Image (cartoon, rainbow, N blue to C red; front, side, top):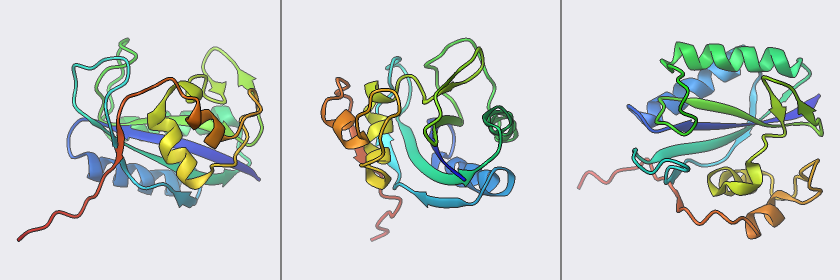
Length: 167
């Protein structure tokens, strides 16, 4: 079995419910979630003219072909209302990225594993370091903790508390 790390992100609609629904579908259609980071509210990366994102990293275990996992992810995104466009950093109801699949290094027209911009994005590294700080990036040879310490991204990533005091 391979450790599969996924990143969830949402900045449209009821972000908490959308992330929760995505996790339910991932558990049913891909694999049981072994562990997950907390939720983090993050500034948008690459296009500042949009709302804040909620992000979360999940760890699963799988032996399925990565291309089949990607097909399932795209289907889940569609079920949750994602409409793809050509704007890479646009607002989205849900985004699910494959970060790592074991130590696999794969580059194809449709899929890159590990995700090619992990080391550049705090919104990935902060939640990932919460659950897997010692995980080694198979290309750079550095741990997630090391990548976070030298990440050039300075955008704010803060824990998101879903509890709202009603007093």
